[in-house]
Image (cartoon, rainbow, N blue to C red):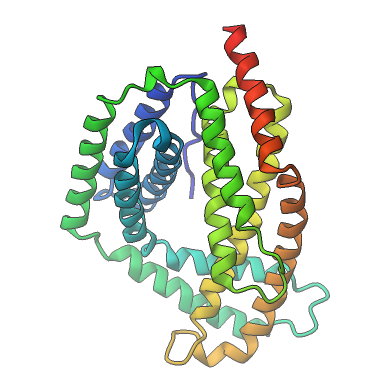
Length: 300
């Protein structure tokens, strides 16, 4: 799937960034009924993630309205996410194939082909199903309301120091969700940690232009962490399809050892990345961001 690259956001202009997010979401929503539906769903889900990260950034200065909007955006994204699950498990199968070398119990070629065909059929069926008109209308109405409310917010009054404080709160939130024991941790705990990392990563991207290039290395490490956690989560979704009465139940004995082995690989990498990303205490991280924000303010 080819997705158009996102243009970098302009330097400190919350309104321009927020407008860009909602404009991208509205453009994707209009294409949900076209032949580009898969790309449109992907772009809309990305826009909603960026919007939710922005709303959390604005929660302190704007107030409870951002919390309500974030809840609405999460529900909309969840509806769209259901159409993504079939591709997610195909991505997980592709990931499993990368560990053939040295694997103690590699999947038989015929078994792997049969599973892939089943998953491709599920994806094709999912893509053939049109999104309900009610959902498309709900997306349109919600994005329109959000854009209208955004126009009334005093974003110009929010300082870089306020933004730094909000990003620091997201850092603290993610750090608190860091698993204490990675081996055998409940997948839901990993998923909660991943969601907090995703929010932090999007917030860092939104405000990156006002900070030095050296800070972009940290953003890159956060993105790598997000990707490792995402691959682990994809494998959890694939594993769920091997439960009794699920589409891949007959192959459970073949798949689960491979899934668990690959998950350990991704979580081992995630742990190393998390140790680096969250090495600073929340207080130290906040001071670091505050200093960068002050320097950026003084340079304008």
